[in-house]
Length: 266
Length: 266
DNA sequence: CCCGAACTGTAACCGCGGTCACCGACGCGA
DNA sequence: TCGCGTCGGTGACCGCGGTTACAGTTCGGG
Image 1: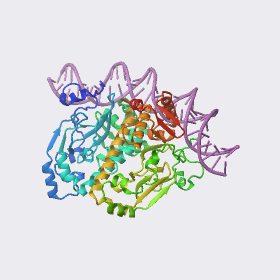
Image 2: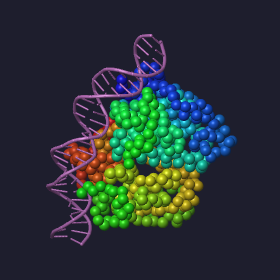
Image 3: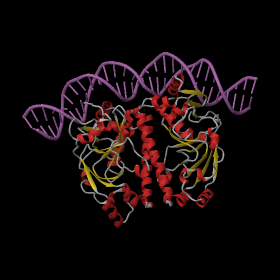
Image 4: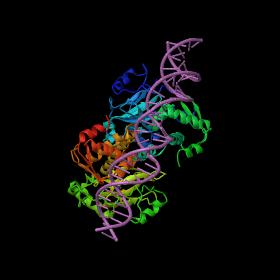
């Protein structure tokens, strides 16, 4: 139906949740076909899996875990928005979260896809506001939440963790610079191929293999590459015709990683 | 002449310096008309002015200053490039430096303008490579250089400095997210107006006044907004016709900040 | 003081990709 | 089982802005 997101409605959206017609950036529930997710699925409750805490001792992690209550969100729910800003740090345990912005005329651009075992909302603990950023659950999601106070008590005091935070921010800067130059330099087909490679590579660590499934609708992929849904569909169709991809409702399977990578631009 | 940058020639460029025909991303020398620069000009040799060291004691700053030799570059010189990577931290004392990337077909995108009193090259001390980034002196430039070893000795050990680094990176992430969404959402005229506002605002602190001068050529501004030189010229011309700007060779004077800001997009 | 290089200005062309307007297909919930 | 909502697919149109190709202007250096 291609209804546009209206900033004022945004407020209601939080309450209307799963009620009436969802805005275009709200994906319906998504079921998993692949068993890739299952492997790491269900119970990574322990802190050890989380990047940022990698070099902490047992007892330290316990102390932190005690201070970080868990919370779940249904697919499509907003974890925060410009109208409902939060001053907390999120640790993603299960499911995927998408960070995005909305243009004045209602189009959405996804600036980050957060995968399980990753921290997000790091910006406010570094003095930034992150106005006008939304966070939305792509799947059913479980997070740990850490208050501003606890963040200061446990994290900012510890130099090892500060280093990790800098590392994460550094990676993010590098990624954003790449995406910026890509949207300026590359054509839409190149960007789409590039995005697919990236998603595939980070989904299953190790270079990139044949047959990786990516659980995104064309609309979501479009928001990630900064294009329209229609042209995304067309480009994916062409790649599929050439046997590089297989397409399914809400999922994309990579058949020929090498050629896709080549297609992403020299 | 609009000659394109060739990646292989890039290497020579370092030596050919101010020799033959410079590539398009190499601006000639730039003289200052405004006295705005003069105010902070010439001798900010002391560390105190530098953001990152703001909360250090006298003696600490002396120790650091002793370990950081100064170096100057002529306008147009490259401080580093993908072919000449450096593993050092730069502290910009005087002049402006531009960080940019080059597309496979030779166009340039400026990802950051570094102003005096700011640190750059922060990425490698955070584990990032920053391949494929160039740093070029826009004016005649003086920097302090700190080796990787000294960075670890003096900076990473100190939690106050780590915090500053995170802060800088956080600001950079926020800026890049804004630029990314701008290039996706906004039209070229909007982006140009927005960039002008930003430059004006950061040049002289405080909101933004009438009559600020911005020392950039149309080509440089184009590289900042991710457009072609020609359309930049056209847009600036239109703004000038409407009395919002005055144009001079290599400089742009903002006459009507409010309208420009409005033009930058709702 | 003049020459060449850089910077600015202008115009014609044209292709990528966004927008609009559909329709068919799948799948979930009643 | 049916129906509706979301997703996927397709085509026509058309405007923004990149590209190309010059011409005029300013400045710094020989």
